Image 1 (cartoon, rainbow, N blue to C red):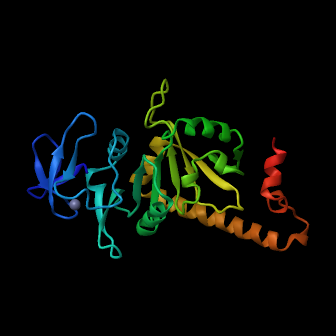
Image 2: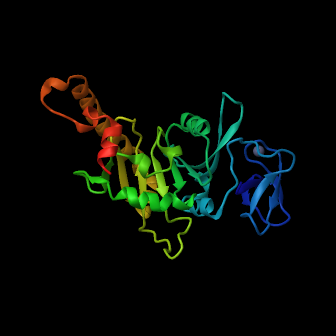
Amino acid sequence: MRFALINNEPIEAAPGLQGNCRGCGRLVIAKCGTVRVHHWAHQTIRMCDSWWEPETEWHRSWKNNFSREWQEVFMPDVQSGEKHIADVRTEHGLVLEFQHSHIKPEERTAREKFYRNMVWVVDGTRLKRDYTRFLKGKKDFRATSKPGIFMADFPDECFPKAWLNSSVPVIFDFKGAGIEGEPEDPGDPLYCLFPYEGLFDAYIAEIPKNAFINTVQNGEWGIRVQSFMNEVNEKRKHQERLRQNPNNGISYRKFIFPRIYIRRRRF
Ligand SMILES: [Zn+2]
């Protein structure tokens, strides 16, 4: 954790300090070594939030884009009796979770159900081939009538498998953790994969990092995503009606040709 309470004030870890966890109230000790970022650790238990993962500079630099009051917000989980720490929770109720390491699908789903109004920000460079695979897959993106919005037939050829079935938007940050020879710039694009189901094409937005941060800060992010998803869902309902009634003269190759056939045809 970045903050603990000392005299009821949230304070960052510094050598020699002791404080109390903002979630469970237990004693926490400042850990200020050279390997991991300075943090607070519980003295007697591992961590009171079972979803918590050790933080990196990447987590901290993302958190720094938002006010301190929005960082590390404890939220009670009535089912487990635990409290979970949202990395960032805005005053508009949007939760941002920054995910650097691998996450099990069950835990990803559990967090999405718990936070509901959330967006994942994922370190897109966790595995060495993640970025090159993305660059290769990106060549097949199809432009839409909306600037910065693309469609992809095969998002699985582009993004890590663990994030394909997410029920909330997933933002991939390919530059934030640093790619050799490519320094980060605030205008660097992030790529947002919107929720989709197997049969349908996936929608992807290319968003400059600073634009994403601004729309989260001013509350527009949630409104824009909701209206975009409403539009997409209407289109999908229409496609589904066409699929169920194929004799109306309009053909959709993706529904008519089995997926495997289209894949083979491409090579
Ligand atoms: Zn605690």
